[in-house]
Image (cartoon, rainbow, N blue to C red):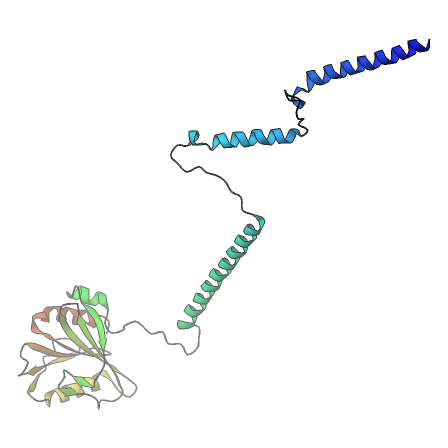
Amino acid sequence: MRNFKIFSIILTIIVVVMVAQVVFSEYVPEWFNKDNKSVQTNVVFKLGDDLEKKESEYFSDENDTNEENLRVVLPKIDDIEEITENRIIDDIQIVQSVEKFETQNTNNLPDFEEINTQVIAVNPYLRTEQLRSSGFLTAIIEEEINDEMLYRTVYIGDIDSVIKKRYLLRDDALLYARVYVFSPDAGNSPDIIYNSLKNKASNASNSSINETNQFGKASFYMNDTIRPETAFLTVKFSSLVYSFSYPKVYHKQVVNLITLISFEK
């Protein structure tokens, strides 16, 4: 009886071993290599190798079409923080620059809401469109320094209470005319200025006066015997007095300019 029990136990062990060998050989063959030398115990390694193999095949020379292989390389966390920080700094600098420009621009401009602000026109006496319309198609207006001389021979420094401006009409190649503008200040008037200029011009050397009154409210020519090809014309308008010097070949254009000025002055 005892021998039978021992025999049954041995037989059971043999059956269990055989069944276990069949199960392992049928369902998990990849756990054993052919030479029974090593056992793979981590399925993740095999999965990683497959992915790496596919990636290598995708970026291989066989799939290259003479263009650069494109790889998306994600920045590290430190790089992202650095990029973000630099972008914020750049944005702040841009905003500060714009605010600084707006402040400077506002500070440099006259504020019309201020009590003592005077709005100054670019040129209240002559405008470029007047020159174009009168026939000086390429001329520009250039303000000159007032040296208290009219036509280079008539001294006008002792005429008080008057604003004196002098302009040159020119382009890159030619000088067309010179324009003197006299604006009465307090205690003066266009009539007083006009008569003062006429008296001074009549007393200048080598000159005589021809008061034709052809233009504006009154006008006269100063004839200079030394400069016969140059015209010297003074015109009184309602509020201002203008004096023109120009080569006589531009007389028609100057007459057109005087007509345009008379519409406004």
